[in-house]
Length: 494
Image 1 (cartoon, rainbow, N blue to C red):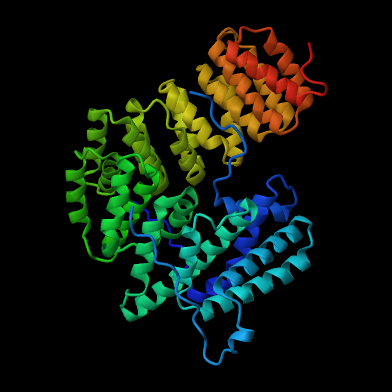
Image 2: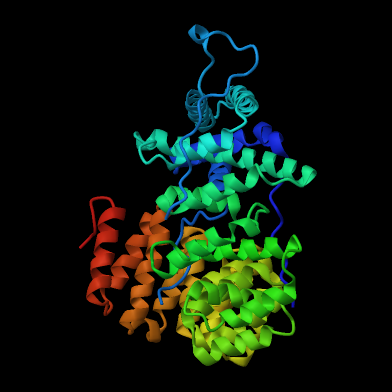
């Protein structure tokens, strides 16, 4: 059993300045125009969300170390006198923000030629900034850590994107130099300062994870700082998923650098299984699942201790990192202690849709593990493959478990046209087991939100009239009436 490491993001040093501004413009466009429909804007949203945008209901319900203030501007040789001084670092950042927002507006208006010209200007300006300031990383981090730097929320978010871009380019530049010269004295303090800033705010956590997760920058020198964040997670003052990602990346880097062997890390992981801190237990299980000799022991430990929070995190890690067939076996073995593992199956479905489809067919034929079948339908259903539609329609027509069929209905209301979505929900309501069960009916009401998002007024009207005649729970009935009032011309019909 082996973990397939996530590919490293490219590390082209200063060349990031020539390619990264497109991400800046795309991210700003995605934030400023979240409902835009032109292809260019859609591409911008995809880039900005880093693959995590979710527009539909996909599943049925079931301390210290802040950086010192930035030093004074570094004067390049031959610069003019103070009367004609070049722009400061912060002024250049603000110019990049302005150009990025202008580019985003041009993209939104489909003025692609103007957007290209604006983007070229931003690339050149970012290159100038990085060339002038050898301490660009420290300066960017100081601005990012300033709680007042956002002032205007709109400008602040765009500025955060720019600072993240500068930090990414600077980390890549310093890593490249450190690798060539075997001297990490320039990059290690910057990474340490970034770790110190992480807990300050949600935006610093997001930026820090983007820059450090699955990247080669965390080294042995940063282990104390990472462990402090793990401790903070155990105390509830730092997000546990973020701590897991940082500690996992650190262990991967230590192994790849030869600082610790896989054997040493596995021995440490066995000790950490009994640790009181869930973050350490999660990372320990991840390490043991990567070792063919110890994976079965880790799974047995999870089942024996019924450690559901840790098992849920481990399931998601397995789905994203293990070889797909191995990941599926892990998820199946964890099923007895997990009510549902929808997010893990969504990840696995995106990686190996045919594997997930075959697993569903196998369990349907055996009529076993309905909870797993439900998650398998969710996992394959949102992949957009031809097989996805086949499996969803198979589940809707033939699965004996109402929960699985309802999940198929969720998928169709989110991925198919409005008529197909309505037909799926009407078919579900034809089943007395659904029509007479308030909890199942509540799930149908939630599925209507997918039709609402697509503007399916007539379909919602017909389904709403039928649902009103059925034994909805009070909260579901209130939710239905609110949805109808929002969606139908003149409000909900009587």
